[in-house]
Length: 244
Ligand SMILES: Cc1cc2nc3c(=O)[nH]c(=O)nc-3n(C[C@H](O)[C@H](O)[C@H](O)COP(=O)(O)OP(=O)(O)OC[C@H]3O[C@@H](n4cnc5c(N)ncnc54)[C@H](O)[C@@H]3O)c2cc1C
Ligand code: FES
Image (cartoon, rainbow, N blue to C red; front, top):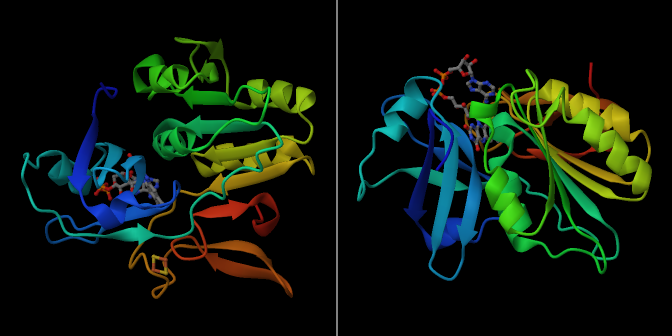
């Protein structure tokens, strides 16, 4: 069961089920702009894909009210997902809040490097908002949990366990999704070590690269340049982004 005020919704759509983890669905919500939501689970065999979202406003409230059998208008899969890890090196997932669901889709598809156990670090403001801990444990991951208020796991942010993991795995691969402040701290903590991939959550308009509502500052071939989160991302390498 997801946390309170969170809903997991399955759709039958063979094209969506072929998404790469980290790509997103752009879901039409009655009379409003589409809302971007990542895939939390993908089942190519049955042609089903799931999205797991927090009910925060009018769009997600409408979506949560849909009954079984409803027909939804979804564009996708959109954007650039996570590249699969190099299978010779250990990898670690770092998720904060509603950034956790796309990491479950990735964890379900990727295999660990030989003689390593994948690590997952999950953060939330408080215990009741923590998502999918048991699912990562069932996949055999070593799971660390942090909460801002200390109501579950270690008190603090995901950065404490991440720094410890990086100290033991200097060439490890890190895949993170969550609020911008968390991603900025993940980028700073990893320094120049290993490979780091960050999935941004940004307000969107069109979702397909046309309106520029979602741009962030990044590094282009000729210096700083704007990158469209919907089309160039939402997953970027650490080197592609500039955090304030
Ligand atoms: C690529 C991508 C993937 C996402 N995946 C997920 C997911 O898997 N699960 C999930 O729960 N949410 C996810 N989100 C966030 C989700 O899109 C928003 O929560 C949703 O659009 C809110 O719509 P609403 O109409 O319910 O809220 P609104 O009425 O539009 O806003 C309600 C509140 O949420 C804030 N908000 C709205 N959109 C965002 C956003 N993109 N980032 C941060 N704050 C926002 C608003 O500032 C406001 O405070 C994702 C966003 C992006 C860009
Ligand atoms: S949302 Fe329109 S360009 Fe990204």
